[in-house]
Image 1 (cartoon, helix red, strand yellow):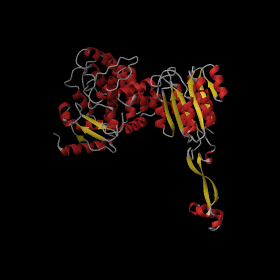
Image 2 (cartoon, helix red, strand yellow):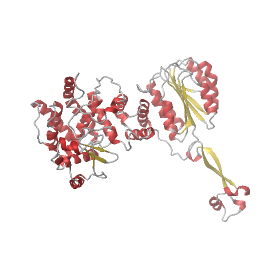
Image 3 (spheres, one colour):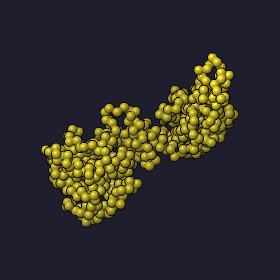
Image 4 (cartoon, helix red, strand yellow):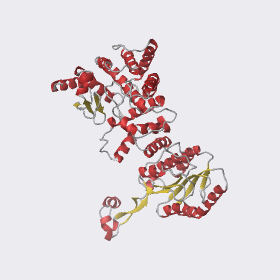
Length: 552
């Protein structure tokens, strides 16, 4: 056992050496740490040391570099959930295995952290890896890792089984990693290079272990295997390896290391908000398939949630310049001052009254007349928006491929909300398949309604559209996104006409078809029908239409 005064003195040295901003004094515990020597919770800033594993695997005399290693994870890499996920994602794009990608992220992060630690003068970090290399099964991937580290620090302390060419490959990789160590923008490309270089060894070790015990000396297990097993990502073109690997590492990384709450106690809403904020923008960087595959493999979010997060990332690229919102539709605001009757003297605006007459006089008291809607100071009275989106079988399923219909609807929704207007949604397919979301400012509720996918036939819900605008007292623009072959158009034409007459702010229909009888009928009713041969035009068409309705 390590004496308490030694623990305290060691931590004081680490703090002076590295700064360790805001980190708590390490906790010495074994529960839940399996074979790990140490670990860190990035959000709670707690370092945990497994004293038994420390003494058994490398010796308690190396406590200081181990604590320094954890501080480097907090200060340098991966630091945040966003960095962790993007590194796993880019590694997986090469390896085709979430478990192998998690291992490579761990090795990559360790190399950057240990390189920085060594450069700052903590030379004993090399001894940590000398001792970690002792006693385990020989592994080419681990040897390649050790050779890469030796190339980064310019010092080989452990003999490996690699031949000259393999050592040269490790040296070339070490130069790439050194060049990117302090520039996180280069990390995605660097980890891909690392993954390409080590993939040969991982594949051979997987083959040699096929049919034998699960895992090899090259890989990592521990934390995270249960999260990946609970959610099966699409394998796509890759052969998915779901076997957790074992490696002689100090620590292992997992999603829960970055959470600001206990995974067992957090509400679904807490988790949703945290993940959405932390991962904002990654959808654009990774693309839909890779983004959803990696989040599923890491056990983050449901399929519907990750679909919504991805489309929200895309929508940010289509932001319109909107006027400042001074009020929102449905708000009560001061419209004009009027003379205040004696029986309503309690409503008098004394300050305004004195600005009109030098002293208080019952004959010259003023009160305010209020109106409801969007304040005239906004510039113009923008209408609310009702979106009717087709999710029949002829439309793309947004969770499986890029749905321009959903992207278009979310662009229009965001523009209306940014203008201070409420939005309602009718998501339809056949008559029995329909979701209605009443007018609201709630982004969550609207995206949930928009992202449903039913399949089946196309029956336009004209009657529901009429009921929606008839029950809403604000002027409303109707936006319909659908394709051709609407089975019940003749039967619903009257309702569509009445809805247009009732909404008081016009209607637009994006129709994926060549001009024909449907187009002529909808135009005759009074809708602005915008035909498109390809839904890939919808994003630009939506920007144009939204600008006409809401932008200055």
